[in-house]
Image 1 (cartoon, rainbow, N blue to C red):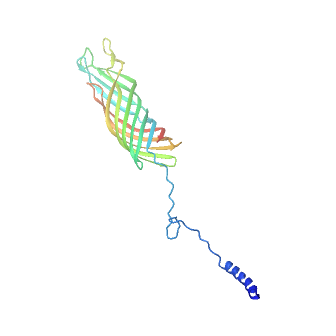
Image 2 (image 1 turned 135 degrees about the horizontal axis):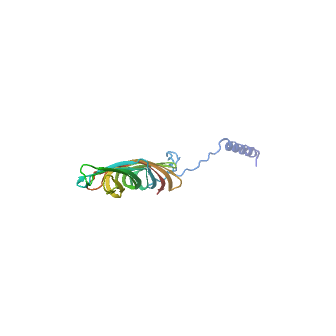
Image 3 (image 1 turned 45 degrees about the vertical axis):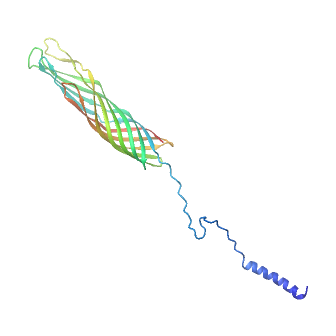
Length: 275
């Protein structure tokens, strides 16, 4: 090799190193066509995670308390000893206890229907005042009074409501309103028996038997419910409800009709099933 060639070899090698370090190659990662973030294509936003599926059905089972009592009365005028007598009866029904069951179906975004049935029973007491003709003298009535005990009263209600329900965490709530069909059975005084002895100037009531009278009416109801989930498909809750209607009962052919304002305010508590 001649001296010129030997001088060019190290110079060429030094020039190659200078070029390599002065302008290093910039590698580019290939981007697959259509991939988000590719040049000229906007990134697609990530989808939010789907929320829990809407509860379609709720089965509501309640024990219920109806704190307000009821007062009602009747008057009858049977004929005795060729003269009209008068029997006035007053009834007092106390606090009611019962149970209820309902199923609520959501149709669209929590809006749906609720169908339910409830039954409430009450103990009834009262009093009876009698004015009864004298068997020997005209226009000389005798009077007597007695207390009534162990009379019964039951009231069933079938509800068809429009309902709206939503859930927030472990709380599930609903409001509802609709039509209620009431069925009432109440014990009313039948024909009392008397102790009448010569000379018949005094009168005593010996027995006050009861006879069941039935009636029905259509009214309305409105209420709400707040429940707490203790599992995926189980909960406990409280329900407030107000319902009302006017029911007429007949105490007999010679008696005035009895008018009852049924329903009223009630509080229920119990278990819930979600599915």
